[in-house]
Image (cartoon, rainbow, N blue to C red; front, top):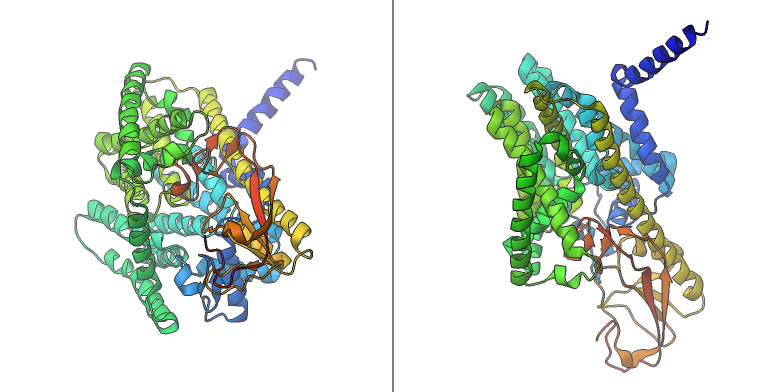
Length: 572
């Protein structure tokens, strides 16, 4: 009897170990829920309000999603001019709100579905491209860029879900010659485009893959016209509704804003590296398992030297020097560290393309390199959300590299793989938690301003946008229109320091000023100019997230005295 107990225990342990491989979709579902459910109460922040306001408009006027005005840049403007995303996610939000209400928990719960769909699709795609698809999907899940993006109600993860499932059906349709799968893939690609315009990049990517595979054009190419037709009719509808094509407007915006900030190409390239390395930091943790020690040491030394030179050149030539404006401790060290991580990602990609040179390698390589080039050089600014589409490809590339090591006789260390995955997951969860705490601090600061000044002054105005605007308006304050809002004696104006589109009032019109501060994340943050963290926009800093002593969320509240006759609201 005594001998049977240990045997039973070993059998139970073996069953537990085998369960994830036998039930991969359940494993991924439980892992994703464990990672995302703790953030269901996350307050809305950054561009979340734009999607929510559009969803409210859709509930009232389903055929006119952008038929309202919003003060997002300091004055009232048509939403069709402000928004740079198509409306499919907003329709999903409108439907979810009908069922679950407009609260944070309900809407975040609704967005668990696209997050799960993206991870399930990554697993299904990885089954065709590597031998350990479960590991590839878990690596994708536990990247900072995925967890942060999945805790918003913006369009990025939804687009990724359509992207990977469109790719799954396309590859299966091409290999098994199923026309219905190719047609379905074309429809999913079209839905990806109508979720976020970047989804259109899937059209040339799959066209290149198919040409490499077939060596000629075929009927498969007709299916790639489906998303183009869908985009054409969307463009036509927006011209009829709003007088201009919204897709073209988004392209023009990217060019205009990028020219306005005028960062040097060196600085832009450096930001692309740091964001790639940080947003996909799990690659850095796996590096010791991917390369031989001597090669890794030689490359690391070369990379440190190269990045240091680029760092100096970038900060000297940039017209707007965000690095020197970042006074946080070790900002330069963090830039070098994550830039090297970005180089590891690109090296992993190029090694795959050079060593294997098959259609799968070209698909993954073009996927990663295309996303990197778009994010760093074509998008209006470098940000983590734009890098999200490459996460599944990087996860698959990483696993393929591990598998190749086994094929050439390198020792496979299962415990090492788990340690690297756990380390990457820990950092990803910490960054998601920091972003959650930042959003909570923004909401609390708005609540604090309203509690103190909402009824104590004639009119409470505010500047700033993102989550601060959403909650200030929800409690009854008004966004200051710099061109039309009438400021009067006794009015109050709240201006959050860590925000955008701010114009402080002239000192001579201020009767009193108070500074309110709310503690946010402590040692890690995703958006703070002082530390150089700019996950949502690299104009905030060259890092997707930064370690250091994080300043509190500060709001300056001005109470106005008698105003000079010709004073303009918010004028300096």
